[in-house]
Amino acid sequence: MKIGPTFRIAARALRRNKMRSILTMLGIIIGVGAVIAMVGIGNGARAQVENQIAALGENMILIFSGSSSTSGVRSGWGGAGTLTIEDALAIGRELPSVRAVSPEVRDGTQVAAGNQNWFTNLLGQSSDYFEMRQWAFESGTGFTEQDVRTAAKVAVIGKTTASQLFGNIDPVGQTFRTQGVPFTIVGLLASKGTSLMGSDQDDTVVVPYTTAMKRLTGANRVRLINVQARSAEEVASAQEQITSLLRQRHNIGPGRDDDFTVRTQDEISEMATSTSRVMTMLLGAIASVSLLVGGIGIMNIMLVSVTERTREIGIRMAVGAHGSDIMLQFLIEAITLSCLGGVIGIILGYGTAEALSHFAGWPTFVSTTAVLTAFGFSAAVGVFFGLYPAKKAAALDPIDALRYE
Image (cartoon, rainbow, N blue to C red; front, top):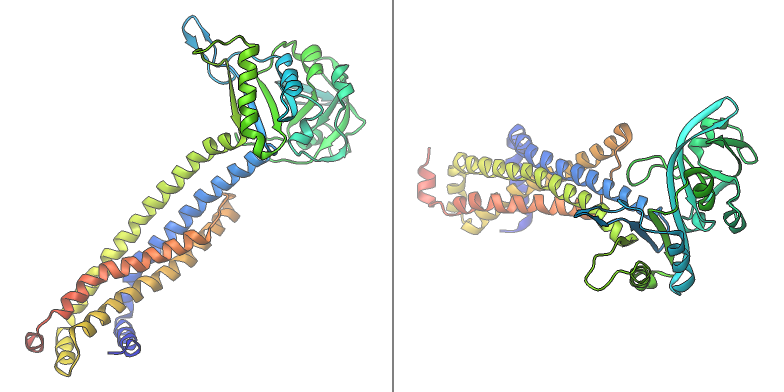
């Protein structure tokens, strides 16, 4: 029997029971739609994390202090101030694979301008920090290396802090006070949005690290050093060189644990996205259960259909139809139900993902791979769960089928 007439016979059989066909497809529609929407949410979350990691800059290496041990008690990243400014200067001076270095001093501080005040994040950085982070300026410029050497009272502020202190006025050239020290604003940073941890990156004041240490915090050690390698190919060698240099400077002998942690941008990205990846897989697996249920529904309806159409099968066999023709007809009906349900489910899932992104503000990303996988899985469900009823129909004895009431 030719495929074309078989498709027409299958379509005619499905149209005879429209409501039953629609209800049978519903399981596949919900399953595929749920898979598309859930995977879209997971992919969106992972993409957002990757974008935030990329916002750190290119070829970045972060050195965290900590991992020290005192009286048997060990501390993790940043748990102890084991890094010094001299460490940062040595890294920039002695390692040829390193392009720029910025030791980081971080604190919270109250800033005031006129009759306005605001609690914000204080960052002490080098003059290379803004180029390392690829952080553009909306107005003004960054501070200079001379400002770092002289611990100048200059600052660069973020958009959020600027709006809280000065409203819509350009803050460049304005002054503010923090801890009784007046600062002149030399630059306004372009908006960066939220960080990897969900904090507002634009709610910040950046000053020379020497100014932060000498005039504001009184700290003599740092808990983080930002390093930029000269190229992506030199990141791994820079990481090894940094580790070797710091172990030498900190007098860490063979077999002893480091009192610092060196992480590349790729390592941080992998750790940050691993949770999102697991969440995506979990959501997809849960949603796939709906596809399994839909497949069972297709098998159930096809078995009922075989029973209802036993005499029809007997008549077709009596006039010359082979068992393979009967099997192909019922298999096509099952695949048609699953594929049509899959197409509608893809539209539903994509629409749901877009709605969540628009109304709930959740980041979503529906990839072509996810769509093709969901559709292929729905077609496979039709084949798998339609094969047994089709074989059962093909195995009927023509004489018994004709006698069936």
